[in-house]
Length: 177
Image 1 (tube, rainbow, N blue to C red):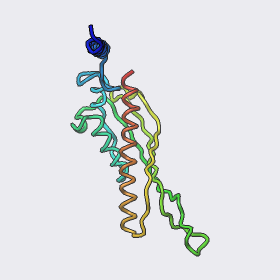
Image 2 (cartoon, helix red, strand yellow):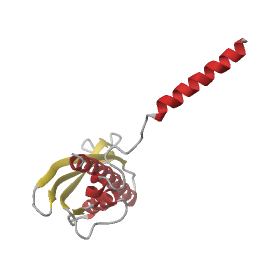
Image 3 (cartoon, rainbow, N blue to C red):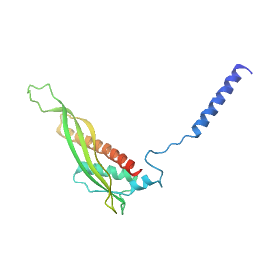
Image 4 (cartoon, one colour):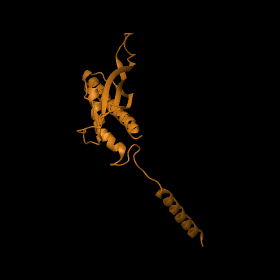
């Protein structure tokens, strides 16, 4: 047997071994047991409380999409999610190039979106999971006022989506137990 034949044989055995090892592996979502699994069904049967302002509506819409897979809210939810969202815009880099020592013009900032939530069963009123979560989005403040308003609104939207994903993961973990 020549050296090239031995190398070819070794490569074949190595490939066969790798396929044998990979045959035992499975890939599936972390908090789902498939379309018929308990966590997926439970997530799809969550009704979410009405929103009081635009940022809370952003979080609510993202949560509805994430929990139902785009199907919308259920007609008869098994669970009720009471959601209270607040947001705060904070300047972090204040302009140092002005002659005024007390300049309050920020060049950058952060948007903090916070949520308190309580997931209960609709039939018994038993609390399944409650908590509070926070998401932060960074933002640059341009000189133009309209651009500043749009940048802040976009940062609120980014933070709202991130917050909805965090809450969904937390709820999915609680329902998966």
